[in-house]
Length: 131
Image (cartoon, rainbow, N blue to C red; front, side, top):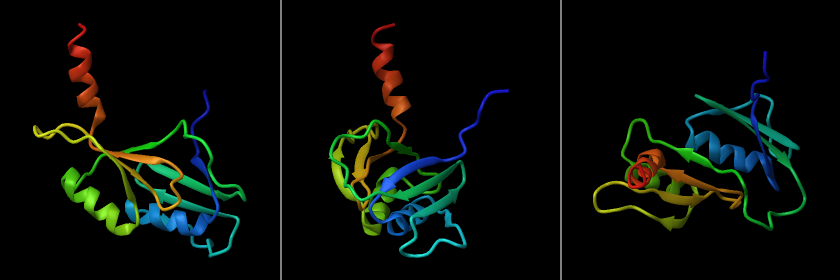
């Protein structure tokens, strides 16, 4: 049997603060024993577990991983507004008039961008041009 991914681990200067943002964004929950100032904090949500660990250095280069979020009970634009109200910042807006495209956001520590909407549909459109 192969290994399974237990959780995605993310470096952070303030694990509790960043985990709180992602718990709200994903409608998840922090572990009961996570407290401000702890060296790590874990978020459990449907489909993902994220572990935030304390590091003293801030991010200096582009990340090689980001989370693609697909809203389940609201439109992409409603979800963008909700995440902005939680403390995310707009990094890039790639929405198209026909409703395709995505919006890239940074979380409060600018640890990585988040992409809203389904990019697979966009990629399928691009790939169909080459088939």
